[in-house]
Image 1: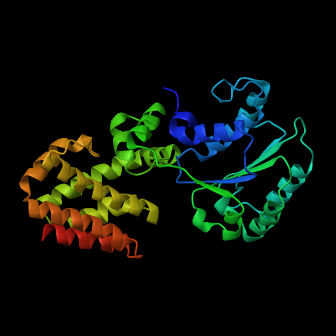
Image 2: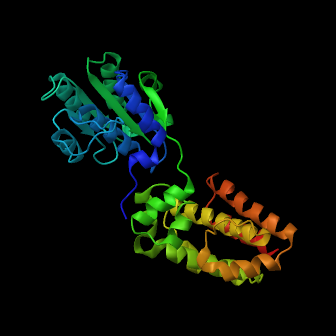
Image 3: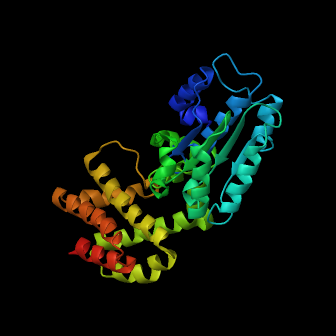
Length: 328
């Protein structure tokens, strides 16, 4: 199965930009903002394709087949300059290179486009250098910046750009994208509740990490359901060794919340697609054994645990406190 195109991921934005370019109303600079997986880089590339395409389709789409499109698709177009972090940040040397390239006249056309990915990683000196450049935009030079966190960017840079917030994707579309990349449907059903970014989803699946933590979660939940103090031992010996950093710990606590969400769905037969379809039998039995009051309280405890963790409390303390509340 082929991956989803930007026309499928962000159809409204693509249509709007097609009209803007057709009318000759392209602004000199845009910031494409949104979480990973929403198509920021794909949209930036689409803009480059549309600006340089030699055979635009009747509905305003780039052909993706002409020499100009092909060179953009292979990152080999002299008038499309792409900057991305080397290591953890975009440095002032990168912006100096960008300025030198843009200062040249278009190699093969009258316009030039530069794309900066992960713009939130600009160092202070790089951001200030870029700001000076944005304050005096050259004619027929367009800037496309992409960011997953616009709050980390200088307000002065934001003020020089048109900020476009990309719409979140429907879970069904994210799942379709994951499955198109070869992720099993049952895994995709769970992953859509954790991320909309394919690369992040694949990281979670690497070395069977998600499979392992899901199994440990189910085993711990079973001990909790039985009010067995062995649940505390499992935290120490089975769960924590798999959670090597704060991000993995946060993901696990999110999974705990999703487990109790599934319990609610099974209890009230809401018809929602389960997150943990592989554990349907256990979830059904557990939901039937709890009263409505117990189920609501336990779900709230699971959500509270996520909030407490965000207060920089250790994962071990959060999980042990949660377990104590659940088996009380």
